[in-house]
Length: 311
Ligand code: BDR
Ligand code: CA
Image (cartoon, rainbow, N blue to C red; front, side, top):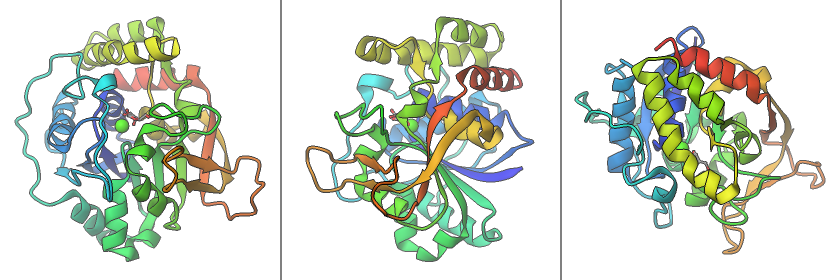
């Protein structure tokens, strides 16, 4: 299996991503979960990470708390999407498993140094603050990273937090700029992909029909989280942004994209956090990321539902 660190700000869609990773032990070994401030403050994202581990029956997972504010800016949160707790929807028990003492950033650095080069993949599902801080503190880790597969950005679909920017990149654009310039192989799941991974009523019924605590919790999470997207975009259900990252590791042929140059806007107020994706290769700048643009959503949901049924 591929060794990964999940860097996350749960978030209902983060939770589903974590569950999908746990449900896929033949392809994925979760070395640890590192929480970051994003959808809700760090005190909640680290707790929510543990709630999800316990829901999955994986209380032995190493969970770390990381950065509680973006590199240079005030934290922007998304309770308007995810609710007050970040995991609104199901009522899940308070976690009893421990939070590790080590800082998430140090765990990321240590893990990359301890393992053979290019054998650990980072999966950021929130703002990139932890990853950027690790790269700043230990620049040697950049060439040890196998791949960074992240959810963030938008090109054709433009923004969900401002007209120009996607939430994860917008919250910490300075961190994102650092990560996109680090030289490690990067694969991006932008809104262009994730807005097509919609939990329609039929797909949610399939989660519920699993007839398991996980299936029921996922159904309730997406029922809560879809309100925002239905009202705002008139979309046909909740977009499962973050699970696209994990699905890519399991079944990369679900996605199509281009290896292109992607730069992050860090100066303009108007377009702060925009992922300037050179889709048509007009800039002459060096490609630094594989920016996905398409998803086979039918097969994505078959995979997801099947796997969640294993938990
Ligand atoms: C991203 O922002 C968060 O609200 C979601 O968890 C996802 O990671 C989508 O823009
Ligand atoms: Ca997230």
